[in-house]
Image (tube, rainbow, N blue to C red; front, side, top):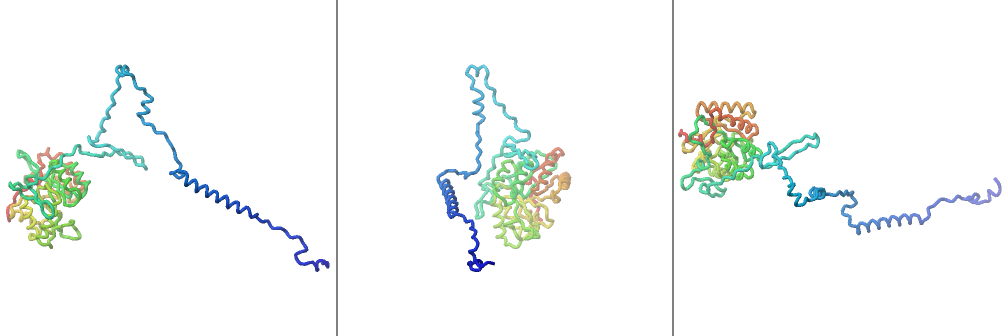
Length: 395
């Protein structure tokens, strides 16, 4: 160490290295550039009318076939037109299986590529004109229009009944398909497949009941109103709103009956919808059946309850009455329904008359429609319920 090292102040003996620094003008330049970009973008968004906002757009020319044809084929002169008249356009033949008033739409499954032709429109051809209701056979009430016997003694059971040829011989079978009106699909299927001689039972539930019943009657079909009544396991098994109950007074049950009666018009009579407990209680059932009888209606017992006293009450009230012998779809399988129809046919041959009931299930409608096509060839006459309803003896 030298004397100069001791006398020299610290940090002054060696030259200091200069640090690299960014000139102050560079950050300012970058900030200015960004501000300019934002200003340009804002001005472009305000001044430029671009509704697509920068989305990619493809433009393809569209040219009608008529225009293309007119350019490709010049119009012939009058002389050429006389010598070579234009060919008439061929009329496309209707697709096999398509109805006259329907259209066939092909549906393609996007996954499997399977093609299926579906007919839309009026599959049954021109619809029959809706049948009108005889204004002399209805009266106004707080619930709506109710059936009554006309001033001339006309009764709904006769006026709205499907005519049967008096010369028709052979064993008779009447069938009622019930539960209609709730499902639009089931109602449409019944109208499309079942012959007109099958009586249709409509519940008071569902939309547009008046139009459906008028359409059915326009096709010559006979209608029965199914009145909801209390079953034994009520309320676990509920027939629906406004169900007639054994716990209610006669006035309350009549009020509910009239509500059901007012839902649509044009029926020949009423039938129980469920109601095993109610039809076994004479005190509750009596006022209901007597009221229906005074209004010119028949009563159809669906035969599901062995305890029913409907026959006795109908006999005392001198009311037309019918009772089902067999529930055709008690076991709703094709084989069992076919067996039930065979038993019904045998019973008709034995007694001369037999009545069957079924629900508006697809399998029931299908098997009954299939059976009805061939039963006439075996000497059986299919008739509406009104044709087998008689006046039972009072017991």
